[in-house]
Length: 317
Image (cartoon, rainbow, N blue to C red):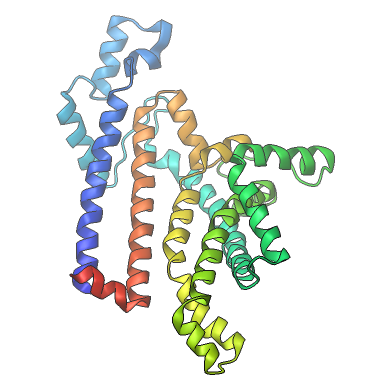
């Protein structure tokens, strides 16, 4: 087990290095000059030279990459050229806001998706299954911004139950932030439930039709004991990785949803940084999101191996 976790950690570090290189080179490959884009029409040869010198843009690309990577390892994500502040300071409150939104949506959406998926699996081809499955397909088909727009029109404009957009600053206390995130939570929950529900339903059906469940039925084991003691735990194992990916997606900022609702999260900050060509900020956000994504997948893999001994033996060979 320790050897397997060690291998996954080494692979995670290698993946992070590759991602950091892709992010850095991808930003460098964008057309135009960073200093010129920042200074705009007021740029003069002298001001351009001074700005490039200040932010180390005159150094060779490999040197700039290693300097940036060294700073990241030491916890220094660089300085925003546009806002003239450390990238870590700019990300701080925005990342907290995204965490609040993500965990609120996950707290509602993940249990709801599991319950509905189990119900649909247990009542296969009956009206609850047909209703839940059809609704989930609609939820998966509609783009997030369409769902958000419909919710704004119904609950903010027509019914006036919730605010349409978030108007509080990014540094407000969490208590003041909560009343403004009802519609974003509902939007993310609908999207999340649609994806997880389908997987849980499929897993439940597969387990319920498996040989060992059929044998348990023939031996007279009570139905609900079969469901909760045998079928449900086995159906949940493949769901762990999907839940981890969902959390990574949520913590990734869900940029479109945050932009629609004007929510001061890390996704909206990323969109603004790309628009402003604030490359240090874009790089900082991208590497943080990569760390989150890889860490959650690593945790999901470890949990899967702990809960399913067959995976430990399979991955050990």
